Length: 363
Image 1 (tube, rainbow, N blue to C red):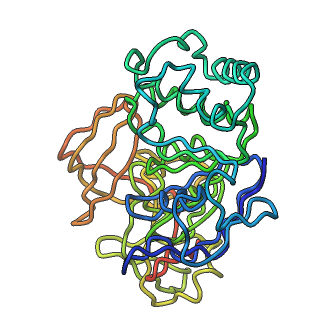
Image 2 (cartoon, rainbow, N blue to C red):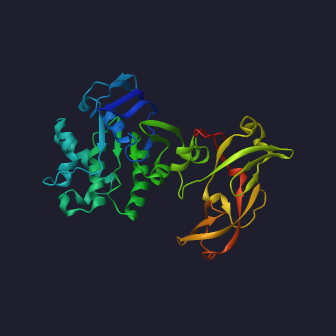
Image 3 (cartoon, rainbow, N blue to C red):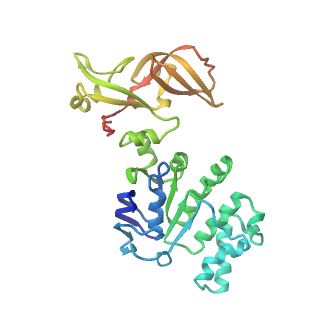
């Protein structure tokens, strides 16, 4: 196993800059997720690490070894693709054994390694079947077994769960994570699904427009987003964003919006002082907006009218009109709310985020 270092990686396709001066350090044995929307450069980055694409600028190090110009076969990596890419004319055993045969491992070692990988993925009873006789989840397990059988230094995964149904994706998320912890391989995983990223990654690298916006643990990118993009991309439903102006009064700082005014806690005073009379963007997550007051929390009460209700069983997602501005609140499904109902909502100011106009987080 090795650590991986991407140093100033840039990749262009004609006039399109797919990856733009990217720096990333992946620790030995770490499970890191490249997360972002379609077209953000995450798959291109993965292909550059694999050696399937050559960067226009920058270097790739596996440990202290520079692999930037090495072909894939000399990097000791394995890759699991979105399409699984299992060979339909080969039985499961031969699919898993294929990379070992290419490297001319002895027959007995091939047999032992295939059995080992199959047992880890719980497919040892499927070795005599053809892929056409397998479900989507079983084919995905075959692809992962084939990837780990050579004991790679780095395991690369490009949205391997996207073709599975919702229930199977949930199950496979936990199984892949447990497998990675068991074998300890350095893993770089690409997805656009923030739930996958949050539940599987030791750290998440959030990407947009070929750049890394923030790298951190799931807790860090959720609780302390570095900018407006990360704040909006992480979390479901999306964080509420409210345009406001910071005003200093004789009782402290307030945030004035088009429809309401919020008195801001004293603890934010030093951070807000440089923003006096400046336009900012307030951010607050739907789960931090309450329909009832709470103790030991700094709250701001706002009146509104329910415009729409998403009933999700365990939760309700309420769209609340506060006078022309819709804010989203996520509440318990135990309460029955109706469209048109007048409500008072409470914003948890201890969970408030403030962003500058350029998107940079203040807190």
